[in-house]
Length: 208
Image 1 (cartoon, rainbow, N blue to C red):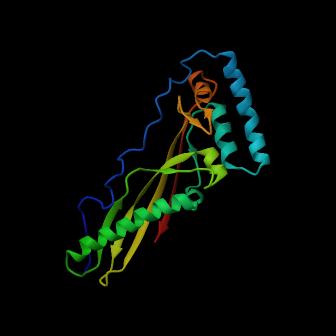
Image 2: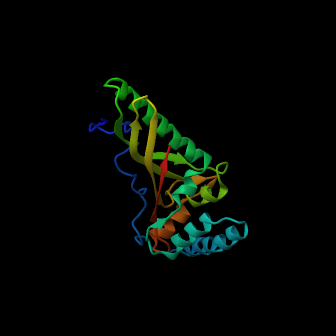
Image 3: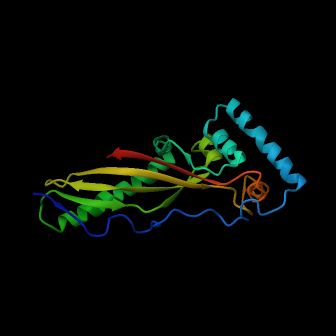
């Protein structure tokens, strides 16, 4: 007969209990609109069609949603994101950690099948141009969380069922930059009410 470990989930050390909140910009529509804000808005409006012509899918979608100003959450295909090498490597590192910790607990008890709940907590993963130009322009980075169960059979073989969740507070960090391009003018679109920040979420399920 098997046993289920009901102690603290394995793999949580180093992860956050909650996804990170948006950066500390001014509140939505808090600042007055200036002429250069309208120019920035016009430039941003021109980018999604250009990106679409270049074959990008995610980046135009995200920028259009920002400029539309609804602030509604956007769902992404987390399975597609998980297939990116950098994201897959980060997830696999957590799964390997789960297996190792589950085996340590299993070896400390009787040699019977056992199940261990697991939770990575929220963790960062960086998406740069070498990973995917589309996802780099769309998100630049995201947080992910793996939750699931590690099962160890009587012979010490492991199997993992997991849920991969993604979260991104989609905004431009005032004072930040990328490739020398400052983010403050783009952050002002939210701060002046010309655009609006939003959350990106998604989930996928797997077995390993």
